[in-house]
Length: 126
Image (cartoon, rainbow, N blue to C red; front, side):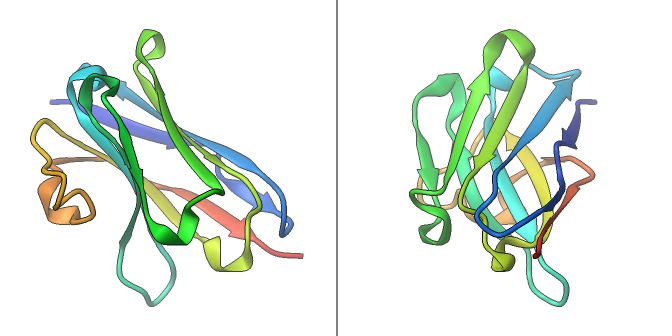
């Protein structure tokens, strides 16, 4: 059974940056499609970005285009989410998720991912 562990969350001022990490054990992330989701209090969990397996491409949600970048380091079996120009509305718990089979038209659906981390809190506030 694979395990995903997120880290890197914290409190940051508006306009600041954070880099989240999603480290895997028990599974080889390079073979998986990996996505970041986020969930703010009282709101549904929503997709942020996805990196396709074998580093074959990425896709971002419109709300984070130009500000967030998803990437992976095969040697560290880790996927990152670099978040720049953070806004208060980015405040949420951020989760990484992974699955072997994710379609290009379904990457934003949480139901297609079998493996989830426990989440890391990001708070953007002055």
